[in-house]
Amino acid sequence: MLLTKKTLFISLLLGSISFVSCESKFRDIQKIHDKAPFYPAGIAEKMRGQYIDSGRVKAILVSEKMLDYSTVKYKFTEFPEGINLTFFDNNNNKNTVVADYAIQYTATELIDLRGNVVITTHDNKKLESDQLYYNQRLDWFYTNGKYKASTDKENFTQGVGVDFDGKLNIIKARNSYAESIKKEEN
Image (cartoon, rainbow, N blue to C red):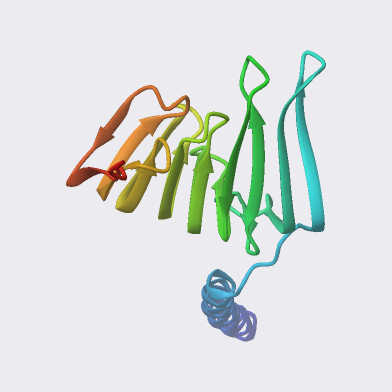
């Protein structure tokens, strides 16, 4: 009986040590996994996508490369080589958004546009910035960076910080100034 109790004790002791040892290694593996790089679930090259609603093309997205990270905890889609987005308003007027880089965060519906961001409307209004955010839920653009907005070749506003609705009807500029350049006629 003493041998059996001793054997049982040793077995339990070794089992406990093994369990603690495995638990420690499991935590080490978890730490490595949490720091490990993740890879896209899908890659599209030279992509062209269309959004069609009620038989009408509403938007056309063109990009050299799209990386789909829909399998990670915080899902996102990345366009490392930029985007060229053409979208059409209710009157079928063509408007464009161009950027050197873009990333769309799925849960927040936020799009981060970076590098030579240019929005051009059908009536030649233009907004340029190094970085611009777009909130898809609210249909609202904003930046805390530098921007330049022009209504034509002679009039522009520039400054730091601006936000506006997707139709460019409501514009809230901060730290900006406007300038009009008209040539004097003789």
